[in-house]
Length: 407
Ligand SMILES: Nc1ncnc2c1ncn2[C@@H]1O[C@H](COP(=O)(O)OP(=O)(O)OP(=O)(O)O)[C@@H](O)[C@H]1O
Ligand SMILES: [Mg+2]
Image 1 (cartoon, rainbow, N blue to C red):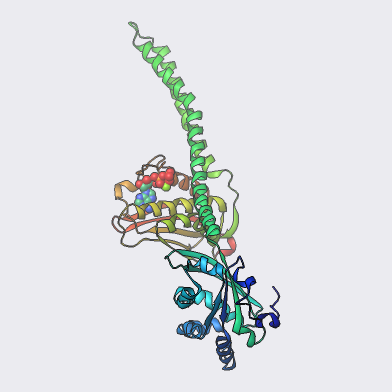
Image 2: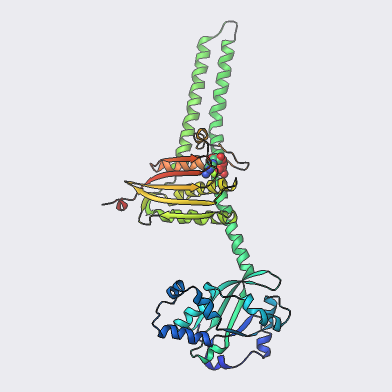
């Protein structure tokens, strides 16, 4: 946006009807002393203002104390639920305390002679309500103009709410896509194996009838038992095919940075982790490329991460932390997902990867079996290690992309 011409900035609008009844909250603030101080910093040789604030965290507050609120329009009063202009102006400094992220946007813009700046912050109203806002301010060219800076505020509560809803929906979709995959897999298993299983049962029943006669018909019985065995073999074969289908199709291995699938899995589960107040850390070597199907690896990670979140949330964990690491080990990339949940007893570890094994009321027991099929279809291994009371670590390997290999 073009800078506001200085002529306009000088005009004192604070008493005008246009200003007072404008439908957008507008705050007029005097930043002229701040402008002066920022220019002095520049004259003293400061070239990187963010670094300066990092080294002098008190400076934001000190600079902010040089500024003054001049006027607020009616929309500001209703935004803050203030009873009068006087009440608002008397408390404006407390209602809008110095805020590094928000204030340094203005300071940086002054420093860099930008024509405008904008930022986000959360306000607290007189009744204690919090309101997320986006604000914008055009900057004048001269110091004089800084005596009347106009800040326009936009209440973004609704947008934030729909964003939160979107995040929840995304988590739900991630879950639903797993559920529908599991649903499809179980339906296909049932469909495919129910025929040979009932045929096997019919043959077994028939053989019992042949043998149960007064004069048992051994030949007939043997033939029926052979049929039963064949049907049972068919069922096993179908299970094997379905299992490889789950893992292998449609595997489209490409070379991509491991960190990408970690980030996309973290993106999927972050609403769930935030809702459960679990801190998620990722320690991923960004130079590692893997050879795999990115969507499937993201699915494996999302399953392991969701299990970790559910484990941490199932008990009184001292620390609520989930850590993803990826490191290289020879020709393999080793992924690990570590949680601070209650851990798993040694004899239970054997059972985890079996289909439909679950300890959760709404669990399906398919997360880990699917993860294992996918990893094995990529020629990798998957395992769990746990120290009951100290959390669990799930690990899996994938082949690294050729150029990732150390020379
Ligand atoms: N990080 C973990 N800590 C403790 N127990 C775990 C962990 N991950 C998995 N488990 C145990 O293994 C079981 C199987 O996990 P799996 O992901 O296969 O199924 P699920 O999470 O129960 O259901 P879903 O099909 O929705 O994923 C879980 O029910 C839980 O008992
Ligand atoms: Mg699970």
